[in-house]
Length: 388
Image 1: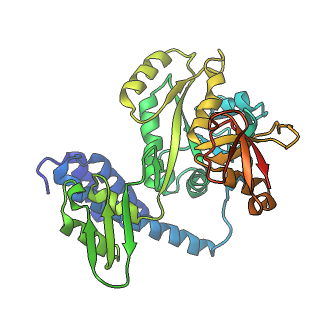
Image 2: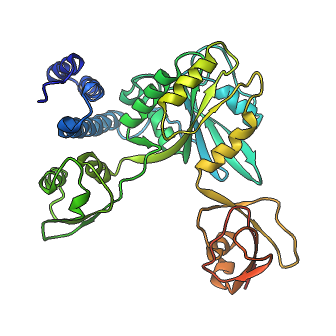
């Protein structure tokens, strides 16, 4: 054990050793992970803590399902509608309901007290020809990842969305609130604004473990990687590593329960005293997040939020045009890098099967009405006319 572990870590470690229930063990492990110094000498310790956390949480979820008999219990399922589903996530009284009302016009209960929202509330945001479903989630509290507050149903609802808008109150302690939110989401397998490590694992029936790209391993060696794989019951595989990675990255690629989500931060209550200072602290502290400060009272920056949400979704808007020249007012949402053939398939299977060519107007075309084939890549705002 490194000599420079903190008293907080040792206290949490003692709590873990003496814990009897899964919940207490999870809480102690999370405290250990939070308190452990982050450097090369503790990386393997960090990985072991994460592995124990993952195992205990899976066991706890299984116990809960068995107690419920596989059915019943609270559900926060919201059927997806529109081009995408986006969750508004924040602590109680962070301004989620107010933002939902301002962006969508939906009448919702708004109160200056915690837990005004007790179940997910969906509403549609109109943005340049498409509809994006926003879902106001109940307030997230510390310990939600181990069942406190709205517990599992709330986290499950957040895991199901396409992107997340995190709301923090700028006038109080936005850094503390953000760290709490990210910690609770991370504890339940959500990776926010992080990319999947560029590692390919091809499992084989025989042959042992072969590692391609060992030079990309950071603070570990091939034997460390093989040990992690074997502990996760992978004994025969080719591991191709394409970028610098750690043991934790290897472990997370093996964990199929992880969800990677994009998010932005909305700093609310920008009209209150202390909000300017809170924003400055937040901007210095945060990396890899776009921060948009708003004030619903003074109508500050509310107009730019729809475009910021759209930018999270990795979709483009495609408009269809009939051979007679009539352009559909409603856009067809598609994934970035979609082709003309993808668009034909989405419009109707007959167009897809009998596709001959298409004409395109917009940024992807060299000139208006350019005749293109099935693999032509479309861009946001393109107009497409399909010929069969």
